[in-house]
Length: 281
Image 1: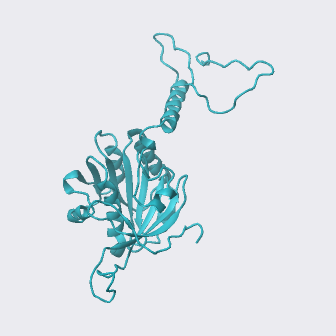
Image 2: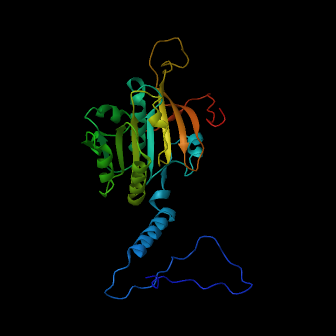
Image 3: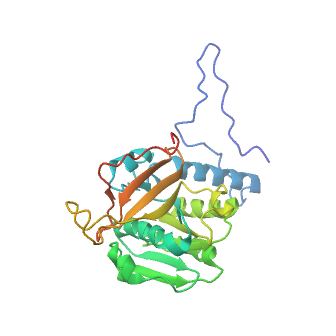
Protein backbone atom coordinates (compact mmCIF):
# COMPACT_ATOMS: atom_id res chain seq x y z
CA UNK A 1 0.00 0.00 0.00
CA UNK A 2 3.01 2.30 0.37
CA UNK A 3 4.29 1.90 -3.21
CA UNK A 4 2.30 4.96 -4.31
CA UNK A 5 4.61 7.28 -2.38
CA UNK A 6 7.74 8.63 -4.10
CA UNK A 7 10.72 8.36 -1.75
CA UNK A 8 13.36 11.06 -2.33
CA UNK A 9 16.94 9.97 -3.04
CA UNK A 10 19.55 10.42 -0.34
CA UNK A 11 21.98 13.29 -0.98
CA UNK A 12 25.37 12.36 -2.36
CA UNK A 13 28.28 12.15 0.01
CA UNK A 14 29.61 15.57 0.89
CA UNK A 15 26.50 17.30 -0.45
CA UNK A 16 24.83 19.97 1.64
CA UNK A 17 21.37 18.89 2.75
CA UNK A 18 18.46 21.33 3.22
CA UNK A 19 16.02 20.70 6.04
CA UNK A 20 13.77 23.71 5.44
CA UNK A 21 10.41 23.74 3.70
CA UNK A 22 10.38 22.42 0.14
CA UNK A 23 10.11 25.01 -2.58
CA UNK A 24 8.29 22.59 -4.86
CA UNK A 25 4.95 20.87 -4.52
CA UNK A 26 5.33 17.46 -2.80
CA UNK A 27 5.04 14.73 -5.44
CA UNK A 28 2.81 11.69 -5.14
CA UNK A 29 3.10 8.93 -7.72
CA UNK A 30 0.13 8.41 -9.99
CA UNK A 31 -2.46 5.93 -8.86
CA UNK A 32 -3.14 3.20 -11.45
CA UNK A 33 -6.28 3.67 -13.50
CA UNK A 34 -9.40 2.26 -11.92
CA UNK A 35 -8.01 2.38 -8.38
CA UNK A 36 -8.92 4.95 -5.77
CA UNK A 37 -6.24 6.31 -3.42
CA UNK A 38 -6.12 4.74 0.01
CA UNK A 39 -7.60 6.70 2.94
CA UNK A 40 -4.08 7.44 4.18
CA UNK A 41 -3.04 8.98 0.85
CA UNK A 42 -6.29 10.93 0.56
CA UNK A 43 -5.71 12.35 4.05
CA UNK A 44 -2.12 13.24 3.18
CA UNK A 45 -3.21 15.09 0.05
CA UNK A 46 -5.82 17.01 2.03
CA UNK A 47 -3.22 18.07 4.61
CA UNK A 48 -0.78 19.18 1.90
CA UNK A 49 -3.49 21.25 0.21
CA UNK A 50 -4.43 22.83 3.54
CA UNK A 51 -0.79 23.78 4.25
CA UNK A 52 -0.47 25.31 0.79
CA UNK A 53 -3.64 27.38 1.30
CA UNK A 54 -2.40 28.69 4.64
CA UNK A 55 1.08 29.68 3.42
CA UNK A 56 0.29 30.80 -0.10
CA UNK A 57 -0.23 34.55 -0.55
CA UNK A 58 -3.85 35.41 -1.13
CA UNK A 59 -6.97 36.36 0.74
CA UNK A 60 -5.52 35.38 4.10
CA UNK A 61 -2.71 37.93 3.65
CA UNK A 62 -5.02 40.82 2.79
CA UNK A 63 -5.92 43.19 5.57
CA UNK A 64 -7.95 46.30 6.30
CA UNK A 65 -6.02 49.03 8.15
CA UNK A 66 -7.89 50.69 11.00
CA UNK A 67 -6.40 54.02 10.01
CA UNK A 68 -4.61 54.68 13.30
CA UNK A 69 -0.89 54.12 12.93
CA UNK A 70 -0.31 53.09 16.54
CA UNK A 71 -2.91 50.31 16.26
CA UNK A 72 -2.01 49.17 12.74
CA UNK A 73 1.65 48.83 13.72
CA UNK A 74 0.66 46.43 16.49
CA UNK A 75 -1.05 44.14 13.96
CA UNK A 76 1.25 41.80 11.99
CA UNK A 77 -0.44 42.53 8.64
CA UNK A 78 -0.90 46.24 9.29
CA UNK A 79 -4.63 45.92 9.84
CA UNK A 80 -7.52 43.53 10.41
CA UNK A 81 -6.59 40.40 8.47
CA UNK A 82 -9.23 39.22 6.04
CA UNK A 83 -9.89 35.51 5.67
CA UNK A 84 -9.53 35.10 9.43
CA UNK A 85 -11.61 34.96 12.61
CA UNK A 86 -11.61 37.91 15.02
CA UNK A 87 -13.42 38.46 18.33
CA UNK A 88 -14.85 41.61 19.88
CA UNK A 89 -16.39 41.93 23.34
CA UNK A 90 -17.34 44.70 25.71
CA UNK A 91 -14.84 45.61 28.41
CA UNK A 92 -17.68 46.29 30.84
CA UNK A 93 -21.26 45.15 31.51
CA UNK A 94 -23.15 44.62 28.25
CA UNK A 95 -25.95 46.89 29.47
CA UNK A 96 -23.49 49.81 29.29
CA UNK A 97 -20.79 48.87 26.80
CA UNK A 98 -22.30 46.39 24.31
CA UNK A 99 -23.14 49.14 21.83
CA UNK A 100 -19.50 50.23 21.69
CA UNK A 101 -18.34 46.74 20.68
CA UNK A 102 -21.09 46.50 18.05
CA UNK A 103 -20.29 49.90 16.54
CA UNK A 104 -16.57 49.09 16.52
CA UNK A 105 -17.35 46.06 14.36
CA UNK A 106 -19.79 48.06 12.20
CA UNK A 107 -17.08 50.63 11.47
CA UNK A 108 -14.74 47.90 10.21
CA UNK A 109 -17.44 46.44 7.98
CA UNK A 110 -18.39 49.89 6.66
CA UNK A 111 -15.06 50.14 4.84
CA UNK A 112 -15.43 46.82 3.06
CA UNK A 113 -17.28 46.39 -0.22
CA UNK A 114 -20.08 43.89 -0.61
CA UNK A 115 -22.90 42.41 1.47
CA UNK A 116 -22.49 41.38 5.09
CA UNK A 117 -24.21 38.46 6.83
CA UNK A 118 -25.04 39.37 10.44
CA UNK A 119 -26.22 36.37 12.50
CA UNK A 120 -28.31 37.22 15.57
CA UNK A 121 -29.66 35.18 18.42
CA UNK A 122 -32.74 37.39 18.39
CA UNK A 123 -33.85 40.41 16.36
CA UNK A 124 -32.62 43.19 18.64
CA UNK A 125 -30.08 45.03 16.48
CA UNK A 126 -30.71 48.75 15.86
CA UNK A 127 -30.01 49.25 12.15
CA UNK A 128 -29.91 53.10 12.26
CA UNK A 129 -27.10 52.79 14.80
CA UNK A 130 -25.09 50.76 12.31
CA UNK A 131 -25.72 53.43 9.67
CA UNK A 132 -24.28 56.07 12.03
CA UNK A 133 -21.02 54.08 11.95
CA UNK A 134 -21.09 53.92 8.15
CA UNK A 135 -22.68 50.47 7.68
CA UNK A 136 -25.83 51.00 5.63
CA UNK A 137 -28.66 48.54 6.45
CA UNK A 138 -29.20 47.72 2.76
CA UNK A 139 -25.79 46.01 2.79
CA UNK A 140 -26.64 43.76 5.72
CA UNK A 141 -28.40 40.39 5.59
CA UNK A 142 -29.86 39.78 9.06
CA UNK A 143 -30.32 36.15 10.12
CA UNK A 144 -32.14 35.34 13.37
CA UNK A 145 -30.67 31.98 14.38
CA UNK A 146 -31.67 31.40 18.01
CA UNK A 147 -29.29 28.87 19.54
CA UNK A 148 -27.78 27.92 16.17
CA UNK A 149 -25.70 31.07 15.74
CA UNK A 150 -22.37 29.30 15.19
CA UNK A 151 -23.83 26.79 12.74
CA UNK A 152 -25.45 29.55 10.67
CA UNK A 153 -22.22 31.55 10.77
CA UNK A 154 -20.25 28.58 9.43
CA UNK A 155 -22.83 28.05 6.71
CA UNK A 156 -22.36 31.66 5.63
CA UNK A 157 -18.78 31.00 4.51
CA UNK A 158 -20.07 28.63 1.85
CA UNK A 159 -21.81 31.45 -0.02
CA UNK A 160 -19.66 33.42 -2.44
CA UNK A 161 -20.01 37.17 -2.69
CA UNK A 162 -20.10 38.04 1.01
CA UNK A 163 -17.64 40.61 2.31
CA UNK A 164 -17.91 39.41 5.90
CA UNK A 165 -19.82 37.17 8.27
CA UNK A 166 -20.59 38.47 11.77
CA UNK A 167 -22.27 36.58 14.58
CA UNK A 168 -23.25 37.46 18.15
CA UNK A 169 -22.47 34.60 20.51
CA UNK A 170 -23.38 34.21 24.17
CA UNK A 171 -21.65 31.73 26.44
CA UNK A 172 -18.62 29.51 26.11
CA UNK A 173 -16.79 29.12 22.79
CA UNK A 174 -14.89 25.85 22.57
CA UNK A 175 -11.49 25.71 20.92
CA UNK A 176 -12.80 23.15 18.42
CA UNK A 177 -15.71 25.41 17.39
CA UNK A 178 -13.42 28.42 16.96
CA UNK A 179 -10.98 26.37 14.87
CA UNK A 180 -13.82 25.33 12.56
CA UNK A 181 -14.75 28.98 12.06
CA UNK A 182 -11.12 30.02 11.54
CA UNK A 183 -10.57 27.29 8.95
CA UNK A 184 -13.80 28.19 7.14
CA UNK A 185 -12.75 31.84 7.04
CA UNK A 186 -9.31 30.93 5.66
CA UNK A 187 -10.75 28.71 2.95
CA UNK A 188 -13.32 31.28 1.84
CA UNK A 189 -11.19 34.41 2.25
CA UNK A 190 -14.13 36.07 4.04
CA UNK A 191 -13.66 38.26 7.12
CA UNK A 192 -15.20 36.62 10.20
CA UNK A 193 -16.02 38.54 13.37
CA UNK A 194 -17.57 37.01 16.45
CA UNK A 195 -19.12 39.46 18.91
CA UNK A 196 -18.98 37.85 22.35
CA UNK A 197 -21.92 38.66 24.61
CA UNK A 198 -22.03 38.07 28.35
CA UNK A 199 -23.98 39.51 31.30
CA UNK A 200 -20.66 39.92 33.11
CA UNK A 201 -17.64 41.54 31.47
CA UNK A 202 -15.32 39.47 33.68
CA UNK A 203 -16.92 36.21 32.56
CA UNK A 204 -14.14 33.54 32.60
CA UNK A 205 -15.51 32.18 29.31
CA UNK A 206 -14.31 35.35 27.55
CA UNK A 207 -10.71 34.58 28.53
CA UNK A 208 -10.61 30.95 27.46
CA UNK A 209 -8.27 30.22 24.51
CA UNK A 210 -9.73 30.30 21.00
CA UNK A 211 -8.38 30.18 17.45
CA UNK A 212 -9.19 33.85 16.74
CA UNK A 213 -6.41 35.89 15.10
CA UNK A 214 -7.23 38.91 17.27
CA UNK A 215 -9.37 39.50 20.36
CA UNK A 216 -10.66 42.99 21.19
CA UNK A 217 -12.33 44.48 24.26
CA UNK A 218 -14.19 47.78 23.82
CA UNK A 219 -15.44 50.08 26.59
CA UNK A 220 -17.39 53.33 26.32
CA UNK A 221 -15.72 56.39 27.87
CA UNK A 222 -17.18 59.80 28.83
CA UNK A 223 -17.55 62.09 25.85
CA UNK A 224 -15.60 65.37 25.77
CA UNK A 225 -17.31 68.78 25.77
CA UNK A 226 -18.75 69.80 22.44
CA UNK A 227 -16.44 72.85 22.32
CA UNK A 228 -12.80 72.15 23.07
CA UNK A 229 -12.10 75.82 23.81
CA UNK A 230 -15.02 75.93 26.29
CA UNK A 231 -14.67 72.82 28.46
CA UNK A 232 -17.30 74.06 30.91
CA UNK A 233 -19.95 74.43 28.25
CA UNK A 234 -22.49 71.59 28.43
CA UNK A 235 -22.70 69.49 25.32
CA UNK A 236 -22.00 66.10 23.84
CA UNK A 237 -18.88 65.66 21.76
CA UNK A 238 -17.79 62.70 19.71
CA UNK A 239 -18.00 59.47 21.68
CA UNK A 240 -14.79 57.93 22.97
CA UNK A 241 -13.83 54.30 23.47
CA UNK A 242 -11.14 52.37 25.25
CA UNK A 243 -9.90 49.81 22.69
CA UNK A 244 -7.90 46.91 24.11
CA UNK A 245 -6.21 44.38 21.88
CA UNK A 246 -5.93 41.51 24.36
CA UNK A 247 -4.58 38.89 21.98
CA UNK A 248 -2.95 39.12 18.57
CA UNK A 249 -1.40 36.16 16.83
CA UNK A 250 2.04 37.30 15.69
CA UNK A 251 1.50 40.85 16.98
CA UNK A 252 1.56 42.99 20.09
CA UNK A 253 -1.35 43.48 22.51
CA UNK A 254 -2.06 47.09 23.34
CA UNK A 255 -4.52 49.63 24.70
CA UNK A 256 -5.66 52.88 23.09
CA UNK A 257 -8.14 55.65 23.71
CA UNK A 258 -9.92 56.50 20.46
CA UNK A 259 -12.75 58.59 19.10
CA UNK A 260 -15.67 56.41 18.03
CA UNK A 261 -16.35 55.55 14.40
CA UNK A 262 -17.63 58.44 12.31
CA UNK A 263 -20.17 58.20 9.48
CA UNK A 264 -17.51 56.59 7.24
CA UNK A 265 -16.54 53.96 9.79
CA UNK A 266 -13.21 55.55 10.70
CA UNK A 267 -11.75 55.88 14.17
CA UNK A 268 -9.83 58.86 15.50
CA UNK A 269 -6.97 58.82 17.98
CA UNK A 270 -7.65 61.00 21.02
CA UNK A 271 -4.98 63.74 20.96
CA UNK A 272 -2.48 64.24 23.75
CA UNK A 273 -3.24 60.87 25.30
CA UNK A 274 -0.51 58.37 26.01
CA UNK A 275 -1.58 55.00 24.59
CA UNK A 276 0.54 52.42 26.34
CA UNK A 277 1.15 48.80 25.58
CA UNK A 278 -0.80 46.35 27.68
CA UNK A 279 2.31 44.23 27.95
CA UNK A 280 4.24 47.10 29.51
CA UNK A 281 1.42 48.08 31.90
